[in-house]
Length: 560
Image 1: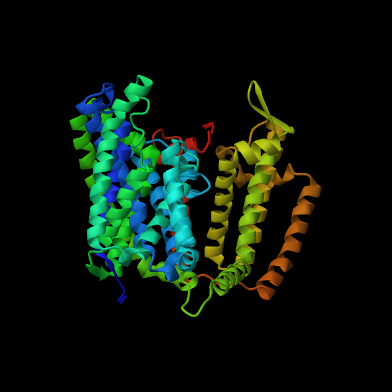
Image 2 (image 1 turned 135 degrees about the horizontal axis):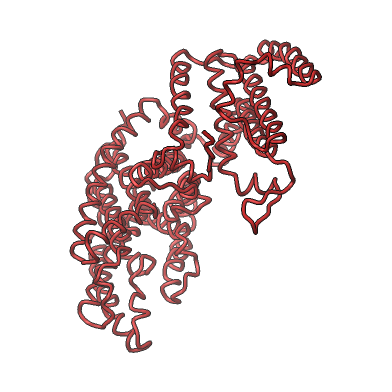
């Protein structure tokens, strides 16, 4: 049992802040009638104060998480990996659930969930993860250059507020998240240097300053610009006043020494993290906002009531789901495996840690080079099959558009190429599960795939259409079909088979790979046919496979 303990107060603050973020994302995008107010009055000032109270949520979240993680630099890399895998899983699962209920699917949304960093899906969370990766460097640097780090953080926070420009790309989110989590690191570092009295005094001063500045900005905007264009000048999460208020709130809570076991706090962190992932899923938000607009008719109190109810239900669902998800991860040991590999050991310098990680990745790539090569081979065969279906070097999907077949295949039809690669790999896996012979399965699957592609290419050349499902029944008349094939083709097929048999025998003997466990084979023999059987519903409108198929650009024609 892990005996390390963490501050439960900070963990609960993390949950509270994540709920504020959800409320901010849903409520203000629902266009409540309170936004119609374009006059300088009490209501406008109160609206600005309320909006600022939800915007501070993201500041508190990132700073709180930084404060919780600061003392765990040995686990910072493993934490970053775990949170990122969890982010991808929650996002993808959420998209699947949304597809089931909304009956809509977009390949762009799937890419956003699977590749959140390069697609900038979760800017703030990306910045926090980057902060986790650099935490060991921060802890080493802050001991030597505390004043420089403090001044740098203050400069980055204050400069955009003074100049009213997004000079550090805060709107993008990643830089903003990185700065905030480092501010949390720094806050935990200086926690013991500030008394509770000083922290409470600064919180009161910053709270009053925020209320005064935020509520008076509509008046200044009207006086200077004769409109409300700058009424929200300080009503944004990047405002230095809000960030500093969040900083000292976190600092105060961190001084409340009520600690519990790490496991409980980690569960709360994952729950709060999931809420942030969901609140940044614009597709899901759009559905909720659309529903609320229809049912609440932009009435502020109705929208607010609906939002709070939905957020509480969402939190309950996330908590229940986490019991299952995190329980399974613990059961299969994936969390411990990541920790064993990525934790910085007590006797390790950073240079030794990076050397070990680099060597470990190299060793993993070397140990799995055959499987990685097979994946690459499957991708190549998918591209090959697409190219072979063309009779010209160009393709014109529309009247006024023409593409080179390579550009069209690798660019426009990339989603379908990936689907075909997955189909090939599943086909290979099925044969492997039947025979438990890797090289035999790979070569046989490849030959059958190539034969199928060539047969379709021949049919397209003759009839300008691929082999139809109904024509597969003609295989019963295989003797008549062989009579229609040129002799040199039959000779070539026989030669390939004769050559392939000793190659398979050699590879199975010389480069023998680990065999599958019996339960793994049984599982795959059940799962793969179920996956392939989904095509029987491909032409059923509003079926899940039909929706996903359309979303990835697959538009099959059913001849019969």
